[in-house]
Length: 316
Image (cartoon, rainbow, N blue to C red; front, side, top):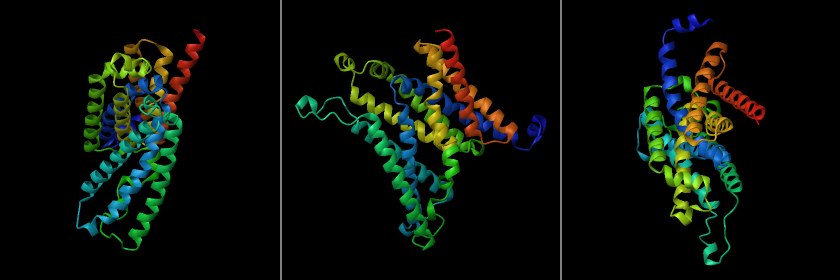
């Protein structure tokens, strides 16, 4: 199929435009956070929080089955919004749990107890595997409840996109509707607004956590805020583009930009540019070759990082 054939296909331009709008909002949000994630060495957080969403998916599935028995006859859209709220809440709770478990700020240490938490990667891995196991068990429970008529009604099994494991892994950005575009733009604006409002203490914490308390920076609050913002960004990115792409968007744009520049403003601009280039080229390759867009975007972003690394080594 040629590009002219694609463009002449009914609904193609609307679908492509929605994908670009929703993807552009999410990519911009994640690209800004990506710089902080890479500098702070929190790359594993994206994977941890995104995979923790499986626990929220399981909880949402069980609640979806039980809704009719609670006397709640929700429409498909209302059920989907409830499920998304549950997943967001679960991811934020998981992110806060990771931050608390890895808190090495010395609250107990200052009182002589010597409890400095566990290493960050250990805390993330713990919540990752526990949440995925919980999600797998609850999904099985929800299916048994639905098949036995335990909940009945259209809420059974937590319907909607949350049950599509392929969609969760690689996303369905080509199926976004106007509401998805609105949600993506709204959450992106809120996250970017929070980053801008707290940029000074957040950057101080990111670049020099050890010295930050001496200058009045609330280290624990900045850690908590960062984890909440990452959780919100990951859930939105996962909803629109899948777990794999959500994780990639929080690592690859920032890592690529840091190979090209060390000035903060330039790095952030380059990170956003890399993310948008990956989105546009990835969608183009997806349309042209009839491949899934999520993996295509990830491969383009990975190629950009490889080029940036090669350039960095040649100019070393």
